[in-house]
Length: 132
Image 1: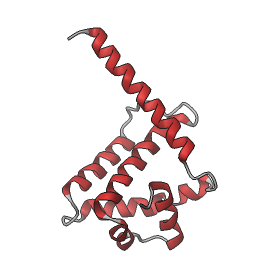
Image 2: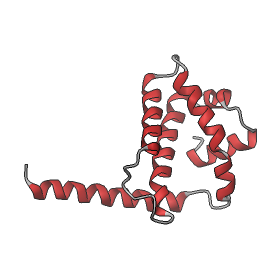
Image 3: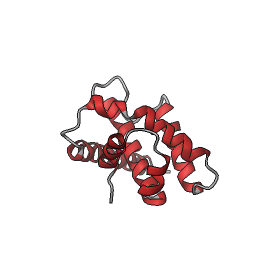
Image 4: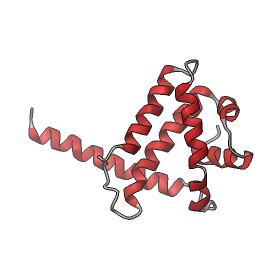
């Protein structure tokens, strides 16, 4: 295999990833404090567990969510965690993309039915992952 081709593909992927990071950072809800978003994590984890454990949920949704958890827990990252702000941002990008996919596949009502947190927390989750 041509090394220049491989290097070009890798460089293209890194550039695409950088563009996605900037895009998600620019489009994030700016009026929501980070502390409030972090408070959603336990409820989101319960939502993920509910979807993964439910055999009636679409298989692709369960696979995406297992992949999301594996990505977040993996010590290998595109951007190392020790880099301030950008380190954890790649995990956030993957989580938002995965949860948007899940929302499109199962629908907002199914997510709402499974949500065990507060209605305000669910509204905030929908703001982050999009409610269309």
